[in-house]
Length: 305
Length: 181
Image 1 (cartoon, chains in turn green, red):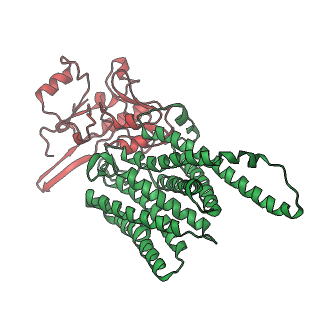
Image 2 (spheres, rainbow over the protein chains, first blue to last red):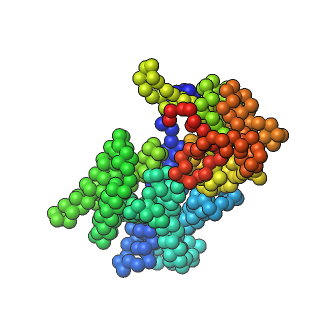
Image 3 (tube, chains in turn purple, red):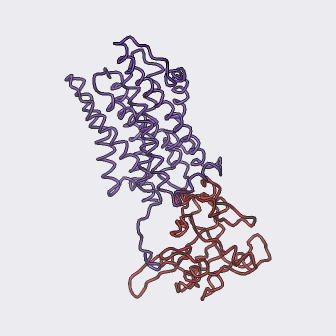
């Protein structure tokens, strides 16, 4: 760096670890939402969807938190975030939302896992007509629905908070964009909630695609994709064109718009019309699109200020 | 602090004095004074130097976003960082519109200009950059006291703050008189 001529090093404070964390927190929220809403409201038995969602949620959020801690200037002092609280800071509030969500997703994944393990055991033992005494894992199954219900709130909060974290930076013209230019309604929390639901659902379906009827989920995912297309169009029209220039423009048009939204939507329609199973490519692209969106938003907001 | 740009010759004595005073790590700066506004065709060219550092905002975004209250106002309204409380999350770096902050390579905590509060100002001295300034471009004092030299200087000259559109209300005042912006 040159002190006098100020050669810019294009430095961004928050880089790819934060982008990936925001993505993983979104996927975790969306996956938990898919599993818990299925558990609470589905008339059909969907054990595979519930298992896939619960496991993806817990793995994503724990990996995401790991990246977040690694990104700190002083990783070993992360615990100070729990002791020093600033209720005016979205990050401080977020620490407690994400901690609650992580705890719930660990408990939920354990409950799902122990139920599945018990199921296997019964299948094995029933041949010999030996009834095993109920284990700890079976006794606590009564907590599944309450944990799922509380988890719905925490997964919505987690997915939304990742947007508020950025939109609350009032000095950042891109992150701080309001819906239809109204400052009182921040845009990113809405966009990130929809994108998180879509990517989390898609990731869950990838994990549950074998031998299950997923028609309802596919329809929901199409609706979410259409909602996201509308939101992205609004965003494109309400901020300056510079945010979509250069390599950020490539990432936006190729990653966010094409791979993440348009192609999976067209492919889903094709799948329905021709009765072909296109679940894996569609969901894979939706997940990639979610990652591209986080990268795009994190970087373009800092590069063009 | 008042910065009278016309008097600055770009010598970087402030940049160096700051690094000595505060032991700022190699390659990092709490303040620097780059050239700006290069304009015109020879022989009618113009350029000025502009000191960059923390603007000591009254409505500091770095303080409001800090999750651990490590960024704070001291009793004199100076924005400081409590290194012990800081975890290095860089939220303040993203929030500061003046790029005044960086992560100190040695401590891992957010770092920036302190007006040399602990080492100088609290003992009644001027910040290192001010006392070393060759052209007398830097002035430091209490703007709330109408009898202070800085307040009287400001009454005579038209000063402005950087990026007022963000509503951060900086207390560092720039006088652009005599330079071509």
